[in-house]
Length: 242
Image 1 (cartoon, helix red, strand yellow):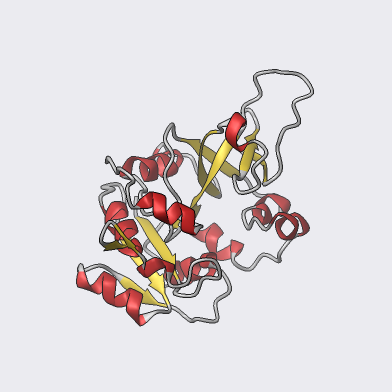
Image 2: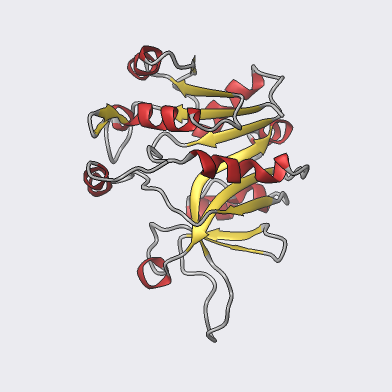
């Protein structure tokens, strides 16, 4: 099975300017992401999609693959779709955010495991058990709940579900990494934005609101996603074990 991993990366960031080039333990963040994704033997090809010559230079310096994309593209998903459109031989396409420097190869294997098992969901994503004491009420931690078959029912920044009784109703902490059937990705990029997507500022809700399924693949681990200066400081001493 041909599996493409695309890492969309842009130089502009409101919270952390020039974030992909920020050094983590002496190495640019985007290099961390690319090298760790490349360690996943399940992937056919790893590509960085960017509008920045500086980011491209970092990846070219390690003999990596880069596709230059239009700076006017509104989202990372659009960058991923542009790359996928040019590679019709790929069957599955991963959207791996450029702020996941500590992604582990086995996490990407878990992400595509339904496809490798012969299933064909429109898209998949990753999640791990939510620390309810710490993150249940934290809007920065995106929660996801699933049906009995592991398909997402809803993603929210709010605490879900509302526990009127203490029962074993699993709620997971979502990781913003996705895999798509290539044909669905090219359809997904043209779907109109939806009300809940806009309300929560969560792009994945667009698929659910349009009636498509997102399979939630579970991992027991978590990574350190870099969204804030505080997380960036933590990353300087983060111990990465493959």
